[in-house]
Length: 337
Image (cartoon, rainbow, N blue to C red; front, side, top):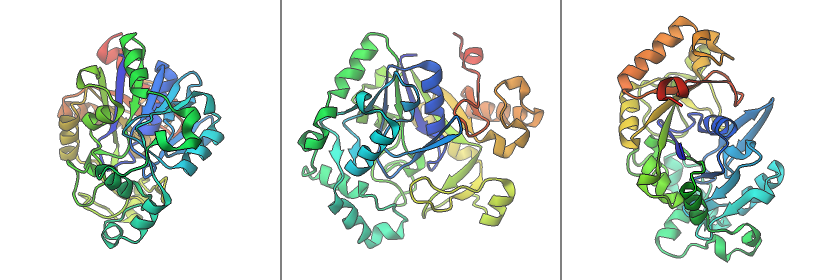
C-alpha cells in the first residue's frame, strides 16, 4: 500500500521503532516521516548495533529512504544535529519550514513547573513549546539559519509521492493512552497521538491512509505517573522478563500484563487495518528469533489467534527479538499480495 501509518496502542514503548525499521527494510518506502518530538525515544537494533532515536525516523536504516520532519514536528537543534551526524543522513533529511523549534527556555520552564513534575513529565521542553505554538509565538524551522539547508516543503513531497504511487511511511510516537484527548489525562503528553493526528501533523488527508498498523507489546509498560491497569512490582516484572528502562530518561518502566480492553479501544480509535505485536519472545521465550508462523511454539500461536479474534483485526507482524529483521511477517498470507 502507498501510505502506511505506524502508531502506538498503549502508553508508548510498544516497539514502533522496530516495526518501522522492519517496514523500511522490507517495503522500501520512498519517504518516511516521524511525528512527535524529543520526549519520545525509538530504539532500533540492526546488525548488533543499537540506535536510540529522538527525532530521525527509524526508517533511516534503508539508505535510499528520504527522511522528513513534518509541519507538526518539534525540533531541538542539539538533538537534531547530533542524530544527523551520528547516522550519516545529512544528504537525505528534510525539515518542513512550519516545524517548531524547542528552545532552552522551554526546557527550563518545564523543569520549574510543579504540575509537570507531579505527573512525571520528561521535561524536554515539548509541552512548553506546544503552548507557545498555540499562543502563536513559537519560533519555526523557517526562522532558524542552521536549518536552512534542510528546509523543504515536506507536505508537497509526500503528497506528490503518493500521487505517483510511491510508498510513504509515517512513524508515530508515544501511544494512544498518552494522547492529550484520548489518554489518561492529566497524565498524558502535550499532543494527540492517534492515527488521525499523525495525518494532520504530516499534512496528509484522511483518505490518503491505506494501512494503519497499531503496535502493541505482548505486555504493557509505562514511564512516569498515571494509571496502569494490572500493574505488577519491579521484582515480578524482572521474574517475568518484562523489565525495561526508558530510552529518553533511563527510568525503569512500570509493567503490567496485556490488557484486552485497552487494546480494543486503541484499535477502534485508530481505525486499525492491521495489528503488530512486539516482544512476543518475552511472553514465550521459545519464540525468540523465529521468523515463520509455523516455527512459533503452539502456545504462542494460540495466544496470537485469540488476540486476533478479540480485536477483530488481522495480526500481521510479530516481533520475536530485538533485531529489526526478527519479525514474523504474515501480511501476504492474511492480506494478499
